[in-house]
Length: 547
Image 1: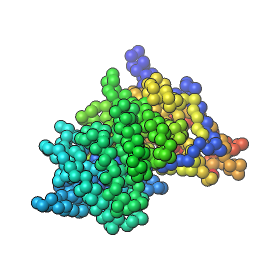
Image 2: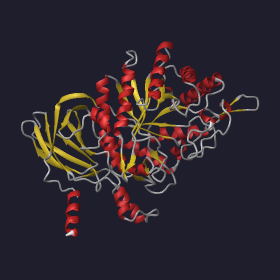
Image 3: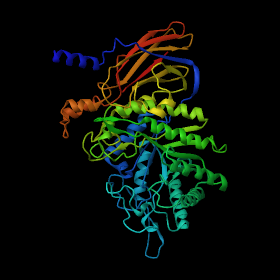
Image 4: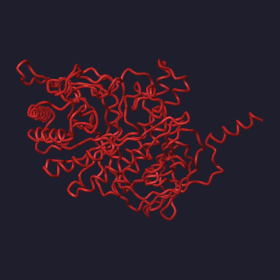
């Protein structure tokens, strides 16, 4: 009897969901909601020196290849002193030092190597101008950060002791970039002043940061008057301190009429281990975004400026593996992309609601060299293998045109998610785009809790097709436990840390974006088609329609 009950329980969790009423999803291709901006095409990482290492080079090219628009890349420590050897949450370029008389000495070899790699890979730098070179620090004590003792403990985060020297350094570096890469090219970059100055990454006062901002922008603009400059790259405005810093920064810029071409802040979720399982916190990330947009919308002169969420992630420490924080186990499998899909649509909705100009959802995720396979870092790539999250970005890159109306009777309201998370019913929803020749519908079945649950049947009605389209071709991609997922394949092999050449070949065969089924033609009737499918918990589908 126990075996029978166990068998029935396993069957219920295996994806058999025929007894459930299908979730009804309606897409109206004729009802435009707004433009589809490629906010997905932005990535970043602490360890800038990984850029020129073997897997860093490979991943940059994968990121460039996945997107029809330029991918932007942001990194920390580009001005830090050191030997150019990366460690967790640390990197350096040694671009600036001083001789015994206090005169500037520039060494561009490491910095040029990083930016040359960006150029060669076809990605665009978002040049984060931080942190303080050793010759300029105002603090005393150890210069470098030494994670895990302290990720912001070094004097590298103290204000420059001479803002005149700092400004001239910024001018010199910008002029060098213009000379090396061309004025027209560098004019397309975004120059961001510092990182998270409201917490330990800046060991000064807010007023000192505002002064630093003005001097930094003056240095950039002295070399390139048309450069795009901005900040302040604060932490999530859901926290009162961060909200005040962002608001005070905008008030400062407004009062001084300082140049400001874009506004940046960060938004993070909050995963936890509860009852022995991972429970995500997408509501916190969306609350950060909601509060930040509201602050910006208060300023009419800034409301239409581009907003760069220069870190937008499920939590705050990419270099904290699941060995350090067990809740970070979400990063290896499908929970990470499902979370990101649920957040993705809401970022557009919140921007629409506040009437602001969202440009970027930058994922602070790249790769970590010489670490275990699937060690649980927040990365896109593990020892040369794509993780499921990277396939989510491949899906978003296949969407184009305008956002069009998509509704689901299984969706959770954005306000409800902000208030309560996704803790009771799952969020089964859709987002759609369309242009004159085709459409794309992204579907997901997301829940904050990682625990297993039955798959959900969905019925997708797509209307508003062109009158001439009597049939459409459906190409259906899927991320779940058995598609676009090298992690489950690796686990089935016994989780090898030294995979054989054959095992590596088998893993590479399954790490990219995979089809759920072979492409097929659907007959259109009255400008509409219908598609039925089952969505396992924590899965994402992309249905491409061409006519």
